[in-house]
Length: 352
Image (cartoon, rainbow, N blue to C red; front, side):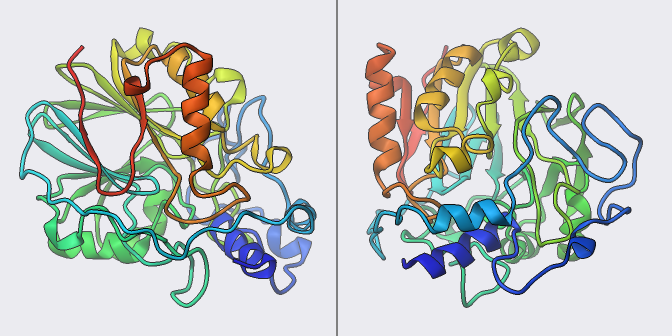
């Protein structure tokens, strides 16, 4: 992918205007188009923010990045073996679809995270980051989907075409942080929204929303108008943590999870889209930081996602996997405790 294409592609995913010229007045607004609620320690009345954290980089930084070191070349196509999951699983099996899309099967429920089956993660179908692997589960081979966990509104995590398709074929409930329900209203899906620190129940599971360090946008005028978050699923057999995107943020997304929710059986953690660090570190952790977070969470096992499907940043396709292997050796952890799954791979998580 050449520099211009990658610049435009990443800008589309991250909600930064890389073409055209949005004025400062167009970006600033006194009204939130997605959410109307009280001021809090992470909402100023118009925009959400990371308390004592770092705001997202702007367009000038994006240009500086893209005028610097060229990104690694990715293959245009990576063959995988797709899988057809069991219809229901009582214990815990997790299947990688691609990027941040995973199928969690636990306690007889089928749960999708940040579902994207489209060819591109983009506001348009003819440009933007294009997947190099097909989805690890063909859409028609999905088991009945009961629940969708939608972590935030960036295009590589919130795909309206896929959500519309899920509504038609499965009609799942979507649980998502504040404001994202407005964006997906056109799909007709049933939604339940959570703020950080709020919980709900679904079947035999508790569903909890906790902080992570990120942001969201769909365009140039809606930055941070919908909240981002971590999900924790609690039930018999241990908790499952899903983080769609986060910066390491001094480990704050991970601290005290076990104290709040009991033993963490599996943590699904992003490990890709991290290079260059000066641009990405605040919002995207790297594999070393993911391992540190894994240790802080005291999880028994972890799955690395957000790598190997679409190119967003400078690192090579397999660099996150290799960096994860090195970090596990550095921290004297067994390789079978934290795995970077390829699309189509699944893991029956051992009991704890």
